[in-house]
Image 1: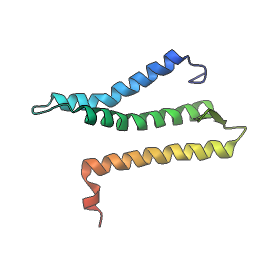
Image 2: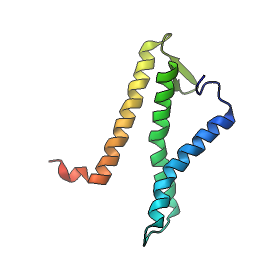
Image 3: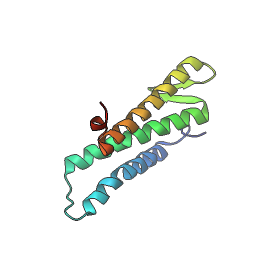
Image 4: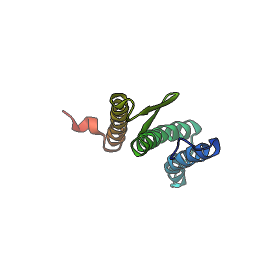
Length: 114
């Protein structure tokens, strides 16, 4: 089954892939002319870009398997449907928040709002 019977090695490989994808923009920005690497910016930016990927993965696993990954265990869609869908909505809300945050930074949305 997806995720629930994975070994620690498979889970670490997924985490490494998420971090590589999150690190890629900072590596590309450093390759630009006048680009430089600041370790704090790279670490913080990578963490910021990795969080939505992990939330999306958790939501995907929950919807695909019927068992939403939450702390210590998972909420089953059939045993506790209310909590399952509450956690699914929380995951979606977090993803929307991150998209809004990204758009606010890229397009400077606070200037556009009255």
